[in-house]
Every structure is written in C-alpha cells, then in structure tokens.
Length: 107
Image 1: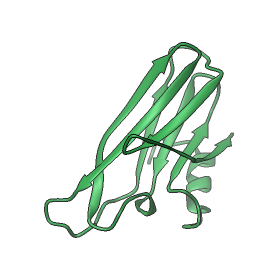
Image 2 (image 1 turned 90 degrees about the horizontal axis):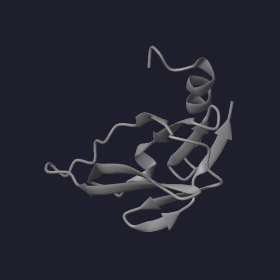
Image 3 (image 1 turned 90 degrees about the vertical axis):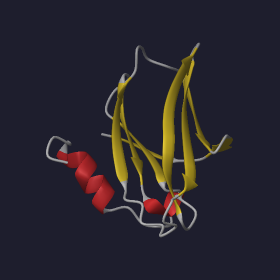
C-alpha cells in the first residue's frame, strides 16, 4: 500500500466489520478503488474473479468467490484501483451473480 493515497488508508483503517465487505472509494469521475475485506466471504472461501463491465451509461463490478482448496478461509483483504474509460451515471455491484450493496465514499 506504499502508493495508496493516505485518505484511502485512513478510510480502510476506520472500517467496521458491520459494513458489507465491499467498499468503493471514489477519487474522481474516472478513477476509483475497490476494497474487499474478508467479511465479504463465506467461511472457507476466497476471492475468485473480479470483473468490471462498462455498458452504456453504467458500469458493473462483478466479484465471485470460490471454496479455497485448503478450506481454511484465510483470505486477505484486497485493494484494486480502476480507471474508467469515461464518466458514468450508474454503478452496480454483484456478488456471485446477485446484485449487492456496498459502502461508497469519495475523497
């Protein structure tokens, strides 16, 4: 996390486990961070594929989980940085193919 802005590091440190486990941190209209903490996962699962789909005036973030081979559930938190091709009006988040809510903050 050496090159992560201090505002994002501060936000992550202040998170509570009561949140959804998916967090979108918006820098501006074309850059955002996606933070996933282990509370997002079922026990014994880890992150699989994370896919960003841009369609029309919206974009979708799809996150899937899979059962870890050792079934220990030792997934670590992950932080991703995304750069969009343009500004969008809408965003949707999906966990295992089902639309879900996330916490969103801007800086």
